[in-house]
Length: 200
Image 1 (tube, helix red, strand yellow):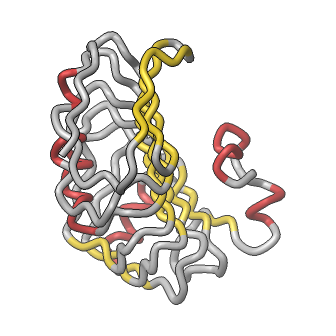
Image 2 (cartoon, rainbow, N blue to C red; image 1 turned 45 degrees about the vertical axis):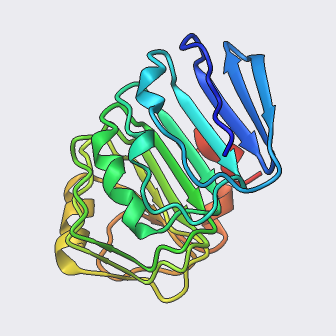
């Protein structure tokens, strides 16, 4: 098993398939190429300046992402490889502002309290999400994007939490009871510009 040791001055970790890049202010300091999916990442909290983690098709069925728990990370962007058990670590990422999860195995959000984070945008798209219940979102949250999940059901308590915090829900169809929504064609004509990078 390969181990990678990197100095803690990096502020961005980027991965695509079999390549990991460690960057500082946009400049790549280290690049690591591997031949198989990553099965474990540990001690990201050791990087005291790490702000962004973006991993595209890098991970392999990770349920324990406790190694991601860091108070400095502001953006966590992952496609493929996580499931709903991994979400418990999100609550411990207290400065997280953007959470983007795409093509996961997350059928349900249940008893999830992420109110201690600073999340402003959450996307869990095309991840087989069907139920959300007893989930508490932070007061900083502005957008919830659930596009690409069929027949989504949200319980009344979670809907009340969403409405009380004036959160806009982005979803393919109208969800009864939610006051602020973007559905159908309005998703792309009114999508928040600061997050268009996720749909372009």
